[in-house]
Length: 526
Image (cartoon, rainbow, N blue to C red; front, side, top):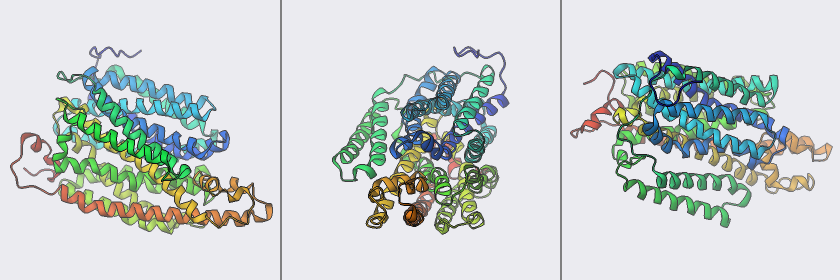
């Protein structure tokens, strides 16, 4: 068994650290996007409701984001290698458990706990790299880390589609658990490190932040069913605001806050933390909802849907390396602004998608979006950690990855709620001739969002099933188009804002600001 008591390992090699970190961190996004391919199979096998099915993805993202800050603080206090080990153990146990059970509530709970393990792994892994590598080698290491995220995104949908076609949705969880277990073989060869000045976990900060994010996510998930103006949803939104304000107050009073709000006074750091939020709306949402559209609307198999997603995710593997090389001559702010404009253009172009769209028609928009995302992925991770001293790398990783995962959790829950709400609006008054079941617009909209329009049509009289599928498919497609235009607008507006925040300031720089200079200056400049 690998030792986790903080004692020095028998032998240390930076290459082993890099490989272990990249494989583990590449697995984490694969667990998100791969599961999205499995959702239709889970729903069909376990006969779940939309709300419980959404929590298979939302629970993982929610806990992943919620405990990132605490995980970063604990990694600094207890040791990065120890936290990395514990995170892998939790992730392996819960992911394997998802493959073994047949109760959707148990799966949701296990996915939530797996998200906690993922947060421990990611925060500790980033800090391990920051402690192991220095100077140019650190930037190269974080470039490899960005590529590993791209690889996880590539392998997630495509391999999940293949695995589901071969052995069903459970094989996705089995394979993810096996890969994480194999990473544990490298644990004896990783160097332990910690922050000597770390004081412990910020309990009130963790509780207020986690509570606010949970309240917002729950409000977004329940709003399409209960109504956006229902007392329960309004109460959850009010709870979110109150807890977020409380979190801000708590962190401002901390001597060593786990989420140092003062860093947001630096425009460059603010921009770097906003980028993954924008990417969540323009890219991660598509990773989750496009497979269901391909399967439920276009009638693709899981394997073909996964293969089609390679058009979107493939460039994410290639372009981080290219962006790292180009950043030596082109300012990173220009590259990041361009990446957002590419995503906006691709999302607008993707509105050509409908029930009869062929794969060749999707090549252009999906490649454009993937290229934009790949450029960003090659620059963000190392830039975020360069803003603080390496002894507090756990805190910096926690802040950046919290923004990344919070954006993903909110974007996915929000897009799901918006799709169901818009589909219900489109269907209102259009199902009156299809029988009593079909008149339940809420149920039909939910089934459409799950990719189960054909299954919903089974309750319609035989002679009307084809017409029913046409009506519902058209309504969901219109809703999907509206959401794509919203995503395009978010990224188009965000591009000039990011460029402005990263624009070079002529004011004297403090030492910490000089550490962050690579965020705004081309590589190689003084």
